[in-house]
Amino acid sequence: MNNNLKRPYIKPSDAKAWSLCARRVWLDNKGDLELAPVEDAFEKLVIELGLEHEQHILADLRAGNEVHTATSPEDTRRLMAEGVDIIYQAQLLDESEGFVGYPDFLIRHENGEYQPADAKLALSADKKEIQVQLGFYRRMLGSTLPAITFLGDGTRDFIGDEANPITNQFISEMRSLLATDEEPLVRYSHSKCKACSYYSHCKPAFEAKEELSLLYGIQGRAADGLEAAGISTISELAAADPANLPDIPYLNGFENKQRAVFQAQSYFSGEVHQIAPVSLPDGQWVHFDIEDNPLTGTGEKHVYLWGFLVPDYGHDAFEYVWTDEANQDYEGWQAFLHQVENYRAKYPNLILAHYSAHERTTIRAYAKRYGMEDNDTVLYLLGDDSPLFDMQKPVLDSLVLPLQGYGLKDICKHKDLVNFQWEDDSSGSQWSVVQFNRFIAETDITKKSLLKSEILGYNRDDVMATRKLEEWLRKNYV
Ligand code: SF4
Image 1 (spheres, rainbow, N blue to C red):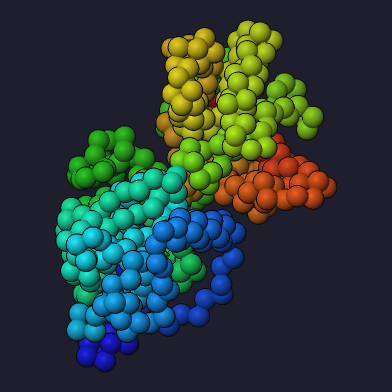
Image 2 (tube, helix red, strand yellow):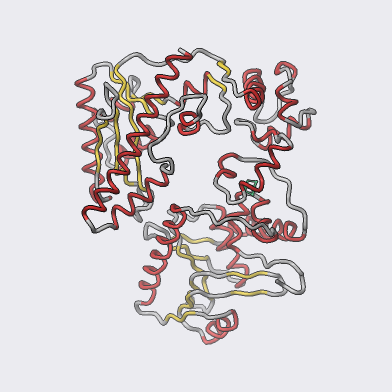
C-alpha cells in the first residue's frame, strides 16, 4: 500500500480489467472476496505462449547488447544511471503519484533516454489496454520517445503521444475508483460477465434487482434510457405496452421495443415468442463448421479443421478436412475447396448450413490471403447464389428465446429448446484451440492420435448440433 494515499498503487496491468468493467478492476484492487481459482486452460496457454514469446525477444535483444535483469525499483534506477543497454524485467515506482509499473524491457536510446518495451502476443498495438500500459510507462519515465511493442507476428509497433489521452483517462478513473469503498454500480454484460471470475458474486445481485441488462439485446445505454422512461426492472418491462415506450438509444422502432418486451416476458415464463415466420432454404443440406487456431505466431489464423455433416446425418456421416500444422494451411484450403466441389456435384441444390458469420468471413479471408477472389469455387461460395446459409439469421429474425445469449450452445443445450448435449461437456472453441496446441506439441503418436479424435468428436458434435437445430426449427416454427 502507498502509505501517503492509503490506497493501492495504480498499475498498468489493471488496464485490461479497467477496459472491461469498472467493478472488476475495483474488486481486483479493493475486494476481499475469496473465490475458488478458475482453471482456464485457454488463458493458461496464452500465458505460456506469451512467456515463450518474451524469451525469444530477450534472446534477440541479447545479441550484441548488454542486458541486465532488474531485481527491484532501486536496482532499476541504478542500472538506468549506469546507462546499461537493456534492462530486463524493469521495476518502476513513483510513490508520490502512487504508480508502479513493470515493463518487460527498458531499451537505452542513443540520446540516453530509455524506451519502455513489452512483448505482446497481439498482432497490433491498437488495443486500449496496450495503449494504456505503454503510455503509462512513458509517463512514469517522462520519456519523449515512443514505446515499443514486440508483436506476436514478429513485427514491432510504436506508441507515442497519441496514447496520452487514454492513459490520462485510465489514471483519473482509477484514482476515483480506488478512492471509494463502495463497489461501483455497473450494468450486466453477458459476454463479459460470463467469462469473469466475479460472475458468481455479481450475478445473484443483478437477478435480485431484476437488472434490465440481464436481457438479451438490452445494453447499458438502452437500460439507462428505459430507466429514464420509468422502467427499472424486468417485471416492469414485461408489463409494458411496446407501442407506449419512447424511442431511446439502441431501442427504437416498434419491432425492437416489442422484442424487448417479449424478451422480458420470456425471462419469467421460459416461453418462445415467434415474431415472424422462419424461412429455411430448400435443398440438400450439408452442415458445416470450422475450427481455427489464432495462436500461430504468424499473424494469420490456421483453420486446422473444416468439418461437415452430410445426409443421412447419422454418426458416420461426418466428413472433414484436417491439417496438422500451420505450414500446411494452403493444402488444407485447397482440400476444402475440392470438398465443396465434390458436394456441389453430388448435391445439385447444395445448402452449406453453418451458425454465425464466422465461416463466411473465414472463407473470404482465405480467398484474400491466397489471392483467389476470382477462383470459381470461391465465387460460387461467396456469390449471389451462395450455398452458404447462416442459421443464426432466422433464429434472430424470427424468435425471441428465453436466453441471455443466442450462441449455438445456448440454444442447443437448453432442455426446453433443442436439447442437444455435446459428448464432452467441457468442450468449446477455446477448448479446441488448447487441444490442438497440445496436439502440435505432442510427440507420442498414440496420445497425438487421441487428441485428434477428441477434437474431431467436438467438431462432429457442432455440426450435429446445427442439424438438430434445423430439425427443431422445421418441427416447431416453419
Ligand atoms: S461479473 Fe460482470 S459486473 Fe461483475 S465484475 Fe465481472 S464483468 Fe464486472
